[in-house]
Image 1 (cartoon, protein in one colour):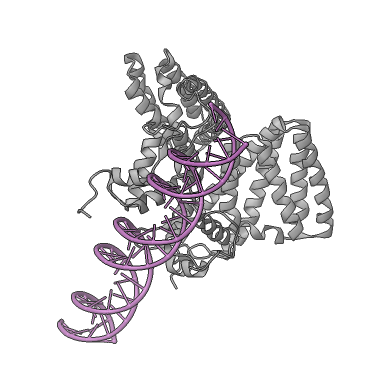
Image 2 (spheres, helix red, strand yellow; image 1 turned 90 degrees about the vertical axis):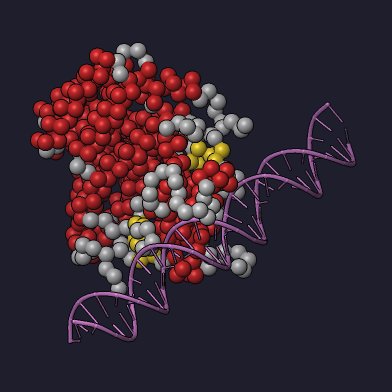
Length: 230
Length: 230
DNA sequence: CTCGAGGCAATTGCATGCACTTTTTGCCTT
DNA sequence: AAGGCAAAAAGTGCATGCAATTGCCTCGAG
């Protein structure tokens, strides 16, 4: 029915659904445990149930939603334990990326990393949390790319997106901004020296701190163990 | 139509399809680049196209198949470059698992690892490639579990399954069996000592060697860069 | 009042059908 | 004979329909 799908970008309808639903999960608009009703989603996006179903299946394969046979899908609920394991994985992955970046980044990649990093110092002084978060994402993405390893990149980005709902508020903590920048600085310095081991350690410490900072919010955000049913 | 699905195990039809098709890819029965026709697969397994489509979507999300919009699905073709990146990732992941295993395995896990490892020595003397491969898989799985990190476990198992088609023939190389056992031995020894760093290095070296051993076959097995169209 | 069985509404799972895109084939032109 | 165009064939993408399963609600027994 009707001509074009208005919202979202292009691609097949299924891809649009994957992005639309995935985005809403990653950005926290859909909360862990929330029920994902096929018919409602289909109506919401003005498509039939089929692409919604396929999207839910793919999101389930990615770990973003949980599917119980004959019982519908919910936004994946991660236990404290599993969350901890993801943060730890993230630390290990970032450490690998930082180490490999130190060893492999081209000089133009190094230059770009340094320039962006120095530029973001201004945002710290201004206390611009939102803008800083954007640069923060950029910074880490540069690290992931700098490793020059497609599969590690995939795993890292995937893990980051699964952690996104639990990491959002980290910069709200007072002083976190400046501290984050200093941690980045340690990573950048090590990379510029080509010191892989130091870069890896710095990155691992950085994530460990983010992990702790986030945990504060997670506890406040997800007090109940099981999913709530409205 | 008709009563029950005879083949494969239980679960929803989609899950059965994911397993069925995924297995055939992982075991090399379906070769990289091979076309996956929805209708043929549906007929082959006596289901409608819908579950096949959903399965292909999920397998695509897992990276085992490649989907081109309106142009069908093929078994994922990995470039030499991407394959190398997966082997490198595997080495890093195994290193993490071995390191964490050294630090975290319970005493019963350590015992089981050692016992199995010693038992497999017999298979090396007998030159029992097939049986040794089974123990080899078991051995590595123990390492992945021993890390006590659910997410790293997921990533590692996933990566291993994606590498499976390219690793099968490794034990055909003369002398590989005994060498593999010795490499395992280095890992086990380090884990027993609780020496995480040494265990990690040993595991990384082990995978690096497997990677090289496999590369030999890959080149012979996959001479063409692009997918072949019959 | 509590507990359990049975039936009903709601929702999921799969099959089928139709529209649209891509690919192939056969014919015409140069 | 080769190239290009067009029409048909094949195959994918999505919508809809129906069967099956689940969860809820009611009703009755203890």
